Amino acid sequence: MTTRRRMMPRSSVSTVFASSSPLADDLDLFRRRLLQNPRQVSAIAPSSRTLARAMTMGLGPASGRVVEFGPGTGRFTEAILARGVPPANLTLFELDEEFIQHLRARFPGVTVLQAGAEAAHEYLWPGVQTVVSGLPLLSMPEPLRRAIVAAAFRILAPRGTYVQFTYGPRPPLPPDIIAALGLRVNKGHQIWANLPPARVYRFRRA
Image (cartoon, rainbow, N blue to C red):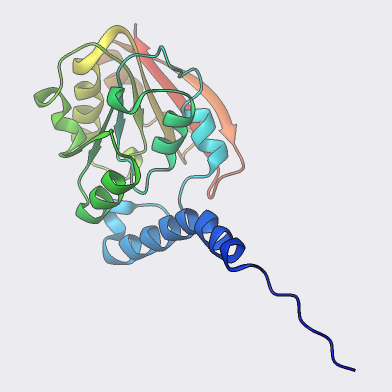
């Protein structure tokens, strides 16, 4: 006696692969860029969804203009939009050409600029409410770190917030530079569900 194998309908097969492909595509892209440009990517794995939720906490439809530094494959971008921020209110600063093509295709309506974060004030007027940064500040020279954070506060509104995560135990800027920039920093949650574990910091004007 022979039995007939139950086959999944073709439409169901397509749906399964379509629903899983964005994450797989992101991971493939991340690995490829890491191998080709490890110094610029400067991470061993994409940020987790748990870290993305922590980085975007408090954002919503009424959050005003939001800027992201170093979006990479778009993990934080996805979380920002999921919070309800309209695509027209979101601007991304990215240097990697392949990441830029990916971001523009994946997030229609979002402005993606090929420029360094330290030049943000050359592209945007002040009044941004939140800057979310996925940049690996601790792996950068101190003058560049200072220039990036200074540029963020040149475009931020008076009560705006700069959100940054690091893998280290301390803020990404030393106390003397934080003081020189007229800032204060709040240490947020330690995110263990990330590789490696990360901590979120929120900077505001003192």
